Length: 132
Image (cartoon, rainbow, N blue to C red):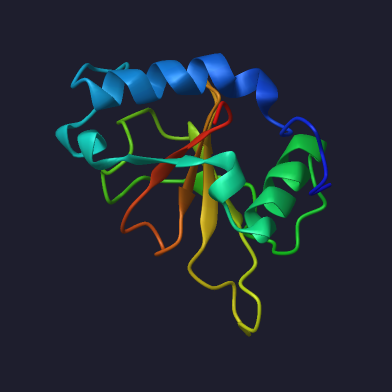
């Protein structure tokens, strides 16, 4: 669906924009941790094509390529805004040529319906913006 006119999570634009706006201007989002200010931003169009594929699978509810996909993401690194256990879920973004799951993931948050991308196995996160 790379030729889609609208991204699969277009309905999440408002909530994601509110989260990003609060993070960028130093505001708070729910119980945001100080580390949450380190969250960056990435345009949907700038994601690798495999991330688009993963977001499409999330929207469809699977099937996912790895059994770990859809499991609870614990946010042990404390980079994402602090939320209760079970709030975040992680999904693999396939890395071409890798014999393992690789380091790339999409992490979703349910209440604010935000989507985060990490290319470095949770060392940094970018909030996905669907409006750019």
